[in-house]
Image 1 (cartoon, rainbow, N blue to C red):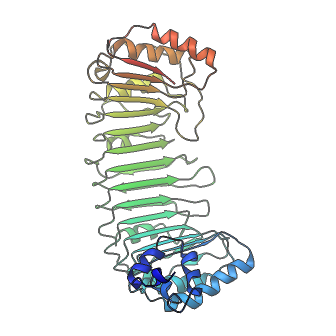
Image 2: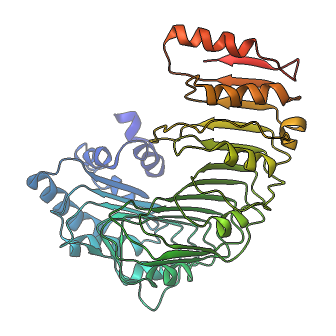
Image 3: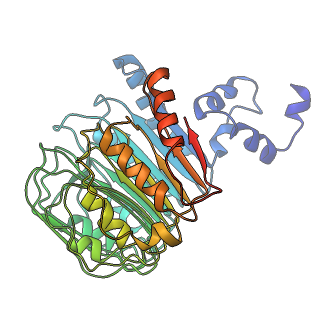
Length: 415
């Protein structure tokens, strides 16, 4: 202990950053030298794992007493993970005010509460010039004031928060001039009917719309600089999807949707290099994905052979094709395969890698695999993954191994 105590305060604070904040605070009992050392920590994280009333009260009293006298001139990150509604919203509000006054750079609040006790964030948060990352989840009421200025904010994640009005989110976004990463997940307590996201600087967007318990009229996007896009939309009501610009810089897109009209969405994604899609709806012909190199399609929603062929015909430079079952999806089978009269250009000239996950060996699946092996001249690997018993696996492997292959160098792998 004497050797450690001989180190400089600056070095000791760096050592304390390696342990949880709760552990760092306990070092205050070691000696006079350590009593206030933790108060210089630039990163603070408080988790309320035990939701008992005494534990919540202890944490609340500790923060009320110590946060106002915290000594670090800059708080790089302040995280609150509060698992219940025993905490008073006004106290949480005060803690945020104090953190912001220390040139706060990252704020994360997870607050599980009933609807009667949502947090209303303090107005000084919306004018915090130093804030780079803001993550909010749960019972947080987003009432954005007229005066908003977040000139440094690059990452914004809003999960199941409550918006005052339909315009609340866009008011916030319009005052984040360099925002790059946005995640919006609408929750069952939300009343937003029209979602508008207009952010010229945005590079990553994840938009998650809820299932049947949530109703929305539609959403509009204007994000021309986007590089990554993820949309999960299984909303039960028919609603509009309006994309106001193309996305020429798009590298990766993930679509898990039940939208009835896909044309506006697909039309904005034609420059994408990697596309993952699960949709029963077939978009109109005429779209061309001339940059697409990696395509993943999901078989859970009765992927039709026509839909697959249409995607392949639109992707003349495709190098990798994956047929899979997306996370938390269940297979409902594929329609019978009718071999197309012409072979898609990508199968003949560019396809190098092909895989099928959750392969069952049913005739319609087997016919698709045999067709690709028969025509893919430049195929290097074909990977078939199955959860069937060992005997069917061997039978399926023999059946596919004996099928003709256009590529003499293609390696067939069965997992």
